[in-house]
Length: 147
Image 1 (cartoon, rainbow, N blue to C red):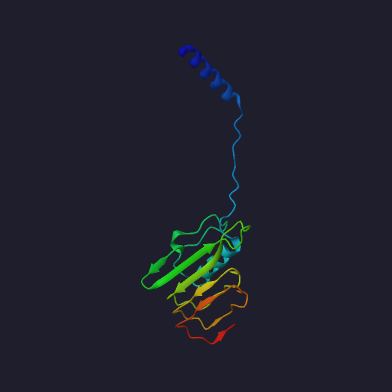
Image 2: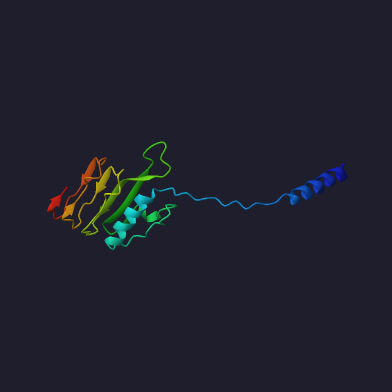
């Protein structure tokens, strides 16, 4: 009986060794919307924030984007799927508090629902493209123009 099992095992190993192995190259579609990643990366770069950038392919976001607090500074991005058929997560909430930012372009974040820019140095902000915005926190900024 042991000889039969050993023989069958050897036959199976030989058969499997003849099967060609085809490497599987998994396309890594982005988990996060590429436009949103570009917009957040631009906000970080344009304002010289000490926050890591995300890969441009949308495959991941830095853990620091979850909650980054340096003293009283807060940089947080929250994501969600805007529709059932949406393949990538979209930015739904953005918190940038106490960073002394002076300029901000959120026009590409079209699914943005909450924007908190408390205690910065913004003098103007255009949110006319952010039609899903339901909460906007702008306390302690030297405002001149808001659209």
